[in-house]
Image (tube, rainbow, N blue to C red; front, side, top):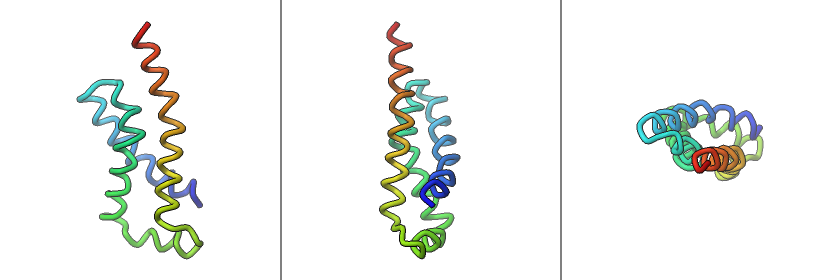
Length: 91
């Protein structure tokens, strides 16, 4: 269930991160993917699909647990990308 929620936020996160990186540079993609992307995904879901959380809540998963899982996965995926970009940029 957690992965289903994460996959539904991933496209919003990637879109937001890509738009920011176009204007601010490549280094900002993983930074936005880790920080701003999940935040914008949550804001979008609160506005566009507020009733979707009932689906997860009926299965015993709170909104807070979904957010923590999403942020954790973004950190785990975005940190190696950020390190790689910084390594390539410094060489």
